[in-house]
Image (cartoon, rainbow, N blue to C red; front, side, top):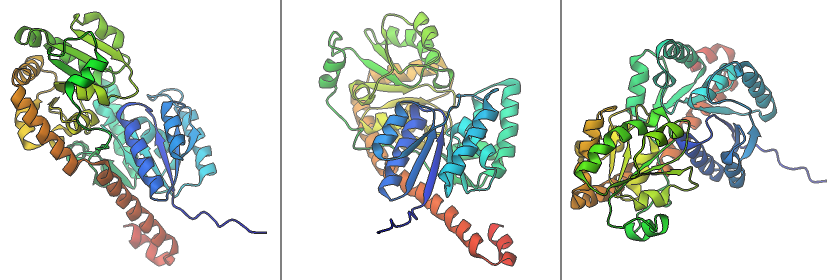
Length: 391
């Protein structure tokens, strides 16, 4: 009787919580590329549309019940991950974002090569005592990450500045430049907003409705934009915990789309895309907008400068939490269609050259290869050599 060949493909276990937004897109893109490269990919995450997308790609998806934020459920989440590790037997664990990074590193504790990718630092998302505790954990938890992968040099610099002693790699975010592509504004806008005048300027903000993404700052700036650009409309694309509060303070010129399955048409319909974040590692939305040939206005947080070509950085970068500066930049671009068109073309060329998801996947594969090779050498080395290999 024929015996099946043993499966000796490298086994990678991705851990992710959250399961939406940019982190979910990064995990999906990595899983797609790694499956195509022949790796055995397992993803542990809470049930969600992400789970279905990953299964459709051919990944082995395991249910991991976990909340988005740390809390009393953490010990149980760590135990469940421990059982998953025994079932999956991964060669490498890749934990995405703060919560999975916390639970994953507590479960693994350095026994398996571990990559931690913060996707923006946890201590920037909170304040006061909670921020101090989050920073204390990141400093301690770094010992259980063989590599900390930052999505921008600025994110790495932030970690280094607060004395997180990580073994760093910087892998800039990338996006699917075939999925995100230009299209005629009028055609797309007519299908999305049939009752909306095609001549009226449209600003689009894509992101989870939450404090991080700063939609409240954009609404504070919007009255000034309307005064300078009569008839302008704003579409907030996405949903989140701040949705009700934002709707209560928004004027009639602001459209809330709710969660959408595909943000591409909204980028294509925009005259200008805005992301007024309070913190990031390197946001995907500006890259996606630029790939669609649309100019952006972004706040000067980690990763923003690195995501823009020089021509946009000098015109499209504003201080965080500054409604006046944001309103000035948005209104100025809405009133200059030729400049918008030129910046959109430059932005797409920049993303094609520097932020194609295939470049990102290759760089992550190089990190995996280095860690797995080092681990294999340590396994086969004589005992007296192993200490020098790990040093």
